[in-house]
Length: 170
Image 1 (cartoon, rainbow, N blue to C red):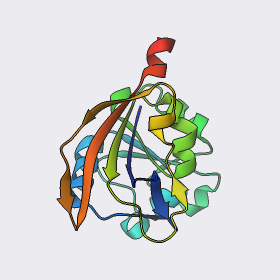
Image 2 (tube, rainbow, N blue to C red):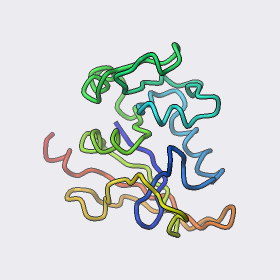
Image 3 (cartoon, one colour):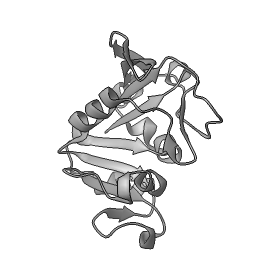
Image 4 (cartoon, one colour):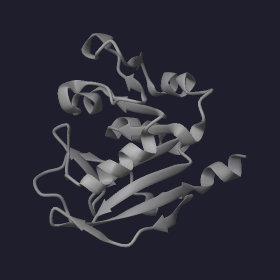
């Protein structure tokens, strides 16, 4: 499986259940990578979507202990281990962890790659959710980095990390 995320320079990803940045190029990349695949998220991530509806053209798996709080057209699993079991027969290159912070933290070690959008600024306000700093985690290496792009007054790059820890387990 893979993870996909947008971070600021301090690895912040959200505040009060919302993304920190509006980057249409990042949203297009997210869509092109995840369409036709499976996305795994927490309930609060689902609630951050427009109208709190699952994303179309993807299998949506939501990790929550309260199935009553999610729409009926998503798969609900009680924990991240159950999410891993639910995707056991899926193509791992088409399984995407998309948030939030606790789901990323629980599943990051099982991810082969992280497709990261690094915004070259510190988010305004007080972010309350962070992604693990891959630059300081053993086994994670930058595989590729795009040229800088600018949208909505923000400069960012697409950075792809690979988990070399999984190579050692093979």
